[in-house]
Amino acid sequence: MSVAFDPCAVIPVYNHSDRLEVIVAALQNHGLSCFLVDDGSGSPHCRVIDALAKRPGVIRLRHSRNRGKGAAVKTGLRAAAAAGFSHVLQIDADGQHEITDVPAFLAAACSEPRAVVCGRPRFDGSMPRSRYYGRWLTHVWVWINTGSLAIPDSMCGFRVYPLAAVMPLLDSVRGERMDFDIEILVRLYWAGVPMVWLPTRVCYRADGVSHFRSWEDNWCISRMHARLFLRRLLRLGGWR
Image (cartoon, rainbow, N blue to C red; front, side, top):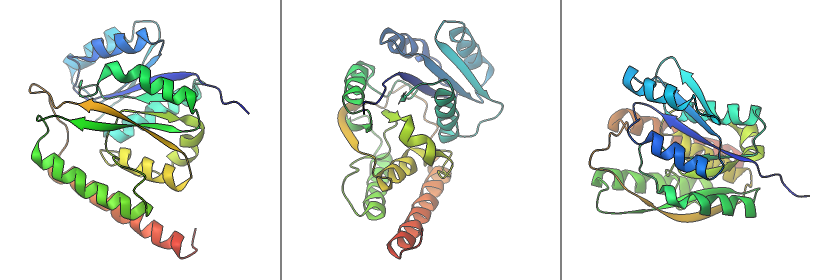
């Protein structure tokens, strides 16, 4: 049986608006409706988001307070599913991701519509060393929690989700900040969802603003790894 392919884009936004118009225009040039999820941004950024939402095919969703990137993505995924879309391309609002790779991601998702298409980042010298070591620690825990090397990178937020596979799992994903991207991939792997990996350039812009909170987000990610590890032990022990 063929799987429908009707994609849209979800962009979580929190005080990132300087490149948002360029990103939205590029995505719309590829025929994508765009869900902009404003995660409690300040007034100057809200004005940019509100102006973009006046365009056909741009839908604004808004959290009254900052709840985290994962919470914003969840809101966007649920809205996209309710609107009848089959797939969601997730991309960050800060311009880190290579927008010219969007056609390759969409083509891969169309070719394998049951798979989640994930970006495998290629970093340049702009990546902070602290983030490099933190990513490797997460890679190790993901390999432990899956018992596999099938997920080479779980933190890149440039991916295409098949909503038919994601929506039944979404309520079980507790991560609502930077831990979301990791947790949803592990749970998709546990569910047997195929994964396609595409290399993509990721650049930490010199004028970029990161909302990664070193202590708080690393603590959230550590707790998430511990929960998943316990869950895997229970699964291995025959408990569901």
